[in-house]
Length: 350
Ligand SMILES: C[S@@+](CC[C@H](N)C(=O)[O-])C[C@H]1O[C@@H](n2cnc3c(N)ncnc32)[C@H](O)[C@@H]1O
Image (tube, rainbow, N blue to C red; front, side, top):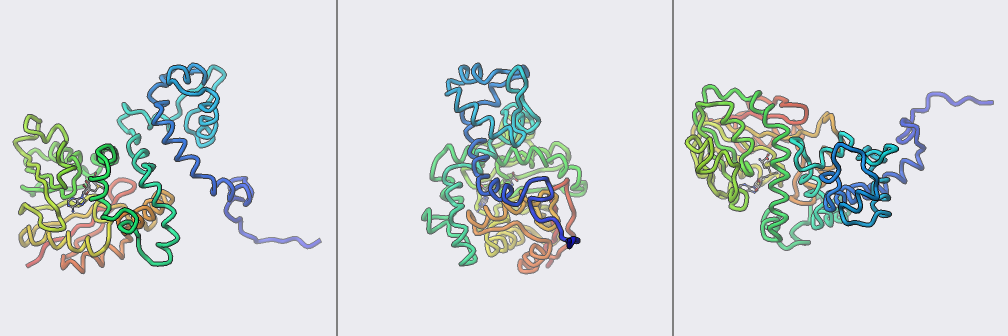
């Protein structure tokens, strides 16, 4: 009998599943984000406390159908979201992240990536593969941020909260990594509601910071940046469009998780920062580079979503370097910050 050796395991064989079961699981994986969204919307994670709770009692407290709730939980439990004990359903570390009161909550981020009009972009992937670009404007008649801010206040709120959730996970590492000791003035451009800016100002008591973002984002800034907030005397909040003009001349401009849209827009925003600043001003891009990402499914999934929503991308180190060159900036370095982000440091020359 011939013995076949040296055949590498294929996808699905390494974790004990067969290729057939792996492919079936993958093709139906959209049940999972749908189940996560439904779980958040009916409030399972917030209703479930520390005590095990039978599905029936949980259904009664939520006012939902007990049989379908059980089926929903069965799917989620297969991914480690909630668990079952003899006494009822309990939280897992993953399901706790759906609770609104968890400091590491990703509740609004999950709602954001499963928002109906965002979800409806996925079928456009085939067309994007054929044409090499996203087709958001053809579908929705306007650009991504204009649509976000006009389609519904609820969507805008979910998006802004989701960005604050992500910032809560990374701001401490950014504050630790950035040496701002010789910097007097700082602007966070596209800084959302200003959670990261406020964290940087708290960590650098000598620093003055300006939050610049579109009107819908700065309408409700972080409480610390408001007129009665703890950082009011060292901060300003400005509505501004970085694709037109950046309204402040500062020592350091930060763009965090914003320059991942169309490459031409990124170059425009960087040039506008250089025009607003002065020779020696530094421009920092803080971004999740896709090369060697430790969370490759997250990085590549977001990369495809960016393609569909802003004709954007997750950058590679080489790609980001090219954008800096196109903007006429001096590249000073690319350094990891925390486990997922990189800071691309540049300087405005002459
Ligand atoms: C992905 S969010 C990142 C927010 C924040 N920097 C963070 O990391 O949490 C992108 C931000 O860019 C802002 N933005 C989009 N277009 C902009 C523009 N033309 N000018 C200024 N800000 C813009 C959005 O309102 C949003 O707050």
